[in-house]
Image 1 (cartoon, rainbow, N blue to C red):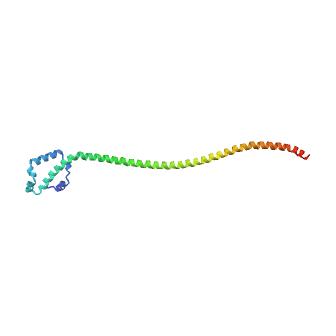
Image 2: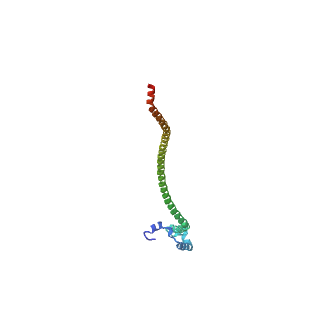
Image 3: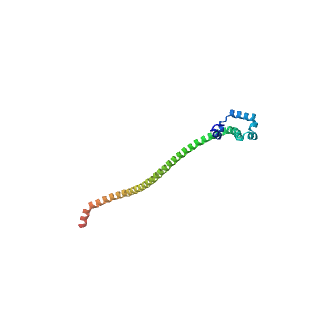
Length: 172
């Protein structure tokens, strides 16, 4: 107790350092010399030692509590590790979802562009088909005209060939 750092050692003492064997030894000592650790008795003998005796008893009780909660602390540590891993995985999944969302948005935009382009092509195709139908209809009508014109040309050629005779008959 005469050392310079004893006060700091007492104040900063970690009850986790009290093992089962040490606790048994101190408990045995407390039992054997119970009167020495009685508050009234110890205060009569040494006012300075009374708080120290109370500190020893408190640390023994605290070490028992620490021993009882050690499995819970281990379980808490494992749960915190698991939570940390899950949070890391969650972050990775969120990043992956964000990447996928960006990709989906890009694909939607591309799909929209291609759909508009397809609509333009469909409109042009319909216009070309309409023009083709009109052209085929016109060709069909013109082929009938061609036959009529050929007939008319033959008739005119016959009339032209017979015109000199008719002029002679009409003049004569």
